[in-house]
Image (tube, rainbow, N blue to C red):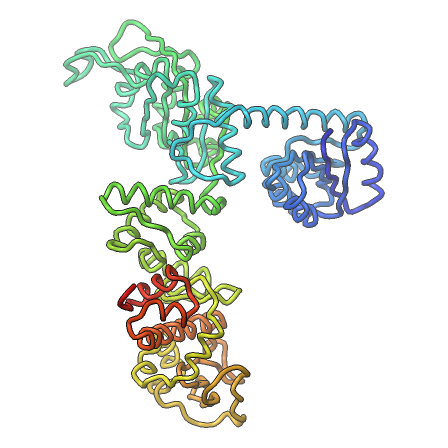
Length: 568
C-alpha cells in the first residue's frame, strides 16, 4: 500500500480522483495548493504526488520543490492538454509521468502502479549496499539522487554523460562509476579534451605505428586501447575539435579503430564516460557539436548539482578537506568554528567544491598557530562577499552582520551567542575610559564622517527636543543622552556611541538596523572583555564565574580579541 497526495484547488476534483487511488489499495490525501504540499512534505512522507499542472503557477518551480522533498516522492502530472513548453518544463524539473484528460480510474491506477514499480526499484538499488564514493561527501537529497544514478549506471555498460558546472566534481563521479562497476580492476583513463591539439588528437586517442610521423620512433597504443576492459573518461568533451568528434563517433559505434599508419583495425572493450560544463544541446544548434555524437553520448545523463544547491553538504566537505590540508602541511588538526561554517554557507560558491577547497587552503594558512578556524581567517574577498549577502550594502572591512536572533558578530564572523543581560549590567556599572570611546568601531566613524561631516563623531551638538531616556529597568548607570550631529543623532551612554538617524533622515544616511546593532555589539563585547581581564586580576576561574561562560567559549573570545588572562 502506498501513500498518495493529490494537489488540486477544487475539492470536487479531489473527491473524483480519490476513489481511483483507493480502489488500488492506496491511502489518499488531498491539499489545495503546492505551497501547502511543500510544507506538509517536510513532516509527512508520501510515495506519490498527483499534481494538476493546468492550475499551477510556475509549474517547473512547483514540481522541483515537491520532487526535492526529503521523502523524494514521484510526481505524477495530470493535464487537460497544457502548453507543451510548460509540460516539458515540468518533466525537466522532475515529474515522472503524465496522464492526459480524459482518463479512466483504471488508467490513473496503472500510472500510479508504474510510479510505484520504479520507486521500489530505486529503493532496492539504494538499499543494495554502500557504494564506493571516495571524496564525494554529503547527504543532501540532490547528492543522494546522483549517487543512485551512479549505482544504476555502474551495473551497465551504456555511455554516461555527466553534466555540471566547473568544480562540481565530475571526475570524482566518473571515477565512482568505474570503481563500482565490474571494470574496477582495469584501467581508468582520464582524457582532458581541452588540452588535445588537433594535429595530435588521433595519435593520442587511437595510437600510431612506428614511423607514422616525424618523431614516431616506436609504435604506441592510444588511450582507447589502454582503456580496454576498463573505463575511459573524456573530460570537457564540449571542447573537443569537431573534426576529432567525427572520428570519435565511429569508435563509439563499433568499439573498433585504426591506429595511424596501421593496416589493421584494433578492438577495445571500453566503457565511455564523458563530462562537460557546456550546454551541448545549444552547441548542436549552433553547429559547434555533432548532433549524432551528442545523441550517442547521452544514453544516460547525470546532472550534478552546484554547491549552492546543497549547502547542507558544506560542513562535511570543509571538515574533510581541512583535515587533509592540515596533514599535508604538517599542522595539528584544526576545528571549524560554528561562525566559519555559517559564513561558508552564506557564500554562493560559483567555483563550487573546487573553489571551496582552494579557499580552505588559504584559510588554514591564515590560521597558522591556532587550533580553531574563524571567519576572519577567510580570504578578504570572500569575507566581503559574505557581508554583501547579509547586509545588502557594499562594505570594505569584511564585517558580518547579526543574525535575526540577535547573535553577536565580531569583525569577520559571529560570536554565536546573544550578549548576556548580566554582561550589559556589569558594563553599565563602570564608566568607559576616553581611550575606549576613541577606539570604537572605525566603520561607524567613517560612515558618520561621510554623512554628517568631519568631527561629527567627536563633537555632536544640538538638541533633538526630547527628554533623556530613563535608564532601563535592571541596569545601573547614567541615563543615555541624545545629542544630534549634522547628519546623525547620537545616543551616548557611558560606553558606546550609536549612529542613529534623525526623524528626517534620508535613505543614504540610514544604515541597516542589523549593521548598527552588530557594530554596537562588537564594541560592547570588546569593552566587556577588557574589563573582565582587569577585574579577574589574572584569575581565569574568577573570570569564568563573572562572565557565566564556559571555559572553551571564554578562551575563544579572548583569542579572537587578542586578550589573555594568566592562569588559563
